[in-house]
Image (spheres, rainbow, N blue to C red):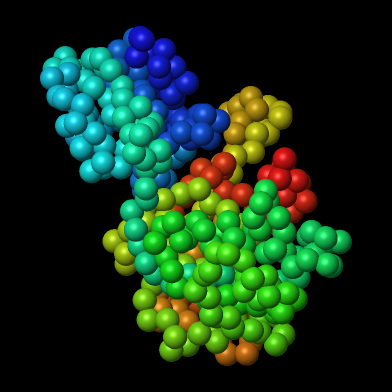
Length: 351
């Protein structure tokens, strides 16, 4: 098979912008694209390349830049076992085979080489505590949440909460803390009576304390960096990559952000003095980083949360920034984040 046919849905031209590449990855549900200059292979672009560009504050409308310096390719004379070893080492979804002239002569996908032993790329394991904020009333999903607490709403044969717990468990996390309040007895009863057992410590707020206020109850119990996740958020991202970014950048708080793009359905005009047009853009895309509701916090952040007071995560972020602390953002694509807390998204997901 012609390798260009094999990768047809993953090819992007080198003049494409960062946001166009991110959209293509979302549309095709892939994390890697093959970049061409017309008919000539240029290199590969990974979701990691895009994330690093966003973290470096590169304009999303800038053309992509391909740096092959640290890219791992196979050569035509390498045996399959050598290629498999390379893929295992870097946990790559595919391995391009490139000759001495820089031509792409073949591509091996993970499922081709590992179909009899392992069908998925296992994520790098981390084991840090996870705090699940599950005490809210789920008012956006009423009247369903009048009967069932939001974390127990079903998606397929599991609940929202189980899917979130499983995501962290697959990453190697095994120590869970769960903030509960609304219908907490039902929540505990369900988790205690399912086959899958999770190591969960519950802590209960007697009254609503905001999006992070109840975490003050964990003072002295968590001594390492830890995840905080809302109970209605799903993210498709290697959690170890987020943790690595958090540690390497010495952040006090890392916010996982999603790149949200809106298209203005009209021509947008900018003007200067006397109403003279300086720029006209037809149906531009506007991109923003939005808060997904998933974070990594350093353990000392718990001491910054006042005990027994209503306190949002935004209050904590503002407080830390005002003190000169470091709050970072780790970007993921729009389709790698799902907010199940709204009817439209919940119905879309269960379909």
